[in-house]
Amino acid sequence: MKLIEARVNGNPRQVNTKYGEKAVMDVVTAEGTEIAIWRPAGDMEVMGRMNGERVSIAIDSKGKASLVEHASTKPQSAQSSNTTTDQPSRSAEIADYIQRLGKLYSHCRAT
Image 1: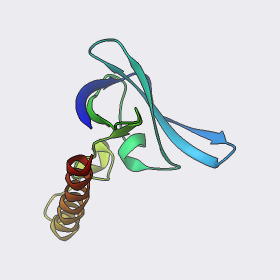
Image 2 (image 1 turned 180 degrees about the vertical axis):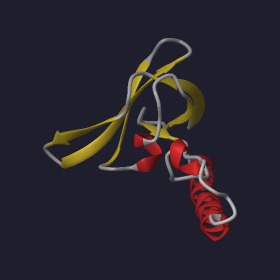
Image 3 (image 1 turned 60 degrees about the vertical axis):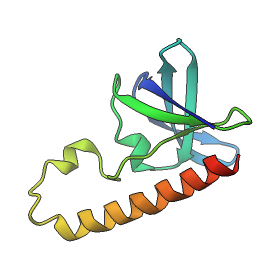
């Protein structure tokens, strides 16, 4: 597994596939490689991204790309709300992030 930096190319979108509705985000690596990141429909980690935003992606041994998620599952504009009322939910988001990151690292170490 390798981790690389990329830039969002265009706005993420929802598409209908034969497997149902999915969220897709196109990214471009520093080398110019275009990669599509596929996630479940309505996934806020993808849909909250903006054109030109830098992201980290992981490429597994089979060549499948996935987004390395950040601590927040809210779009950037929603994060600008009053932080004093969001502290309990923020703690839960951080705990969830740490759990997902641990699973990612375990997977990376196993491959």
